[in-house]
Image (cartoon, rainbow, N blue to C red; front, side, top):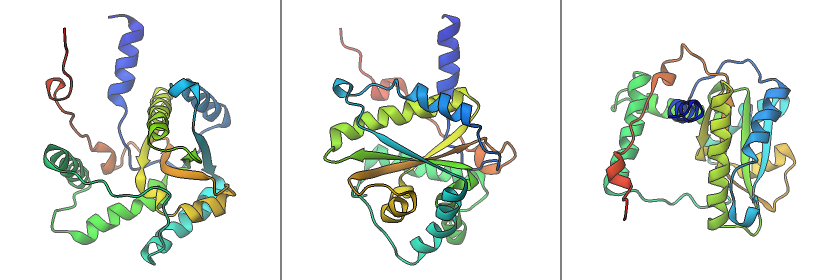
Length: 224
């Protein structure tokens, strides 16, 4: 294995969804480098059907100050339906992932208040100093959302390579009207999800959470 391959494998293996961050902001040069690298992500016919808005500073703090209370008040607005249904092994993986997080933060299955508190941390971006909102311009749909997913993975790997942590969050698409209003984004741009990111808090129990992956034979079939 080449040294380049080893480095890449290490970056991929070390990327995890992290849910606690230090308040230290990422410097502009690093931000621009990470987001520039992500532009190399593939897309159908090189259409690059994504728009990214990165909130930091005052704009981020306005979102952080209000999203929790708005959600608790029942304020919801989404561009894409949240209607996925998980059955069988997919449901098992979902439950296993949630349980791994609750175990890390010492929240029991019976502790509904603790679980709710952990969920609500989505809306304060897990204390991250930055959040990226990933949009699809109209009239793009499912195929272009797949392209956006490839962009997001490339972005998060670039963040990992530069010593940053990240957490992709569907929950950040639950108040898209407020996000667009706060950041001055045109209604023709549809929010798919957000990514909180920054320097991970190494002492936070939540960041000890590690989820497993399916065996290669369970998901990949080699034909010859």
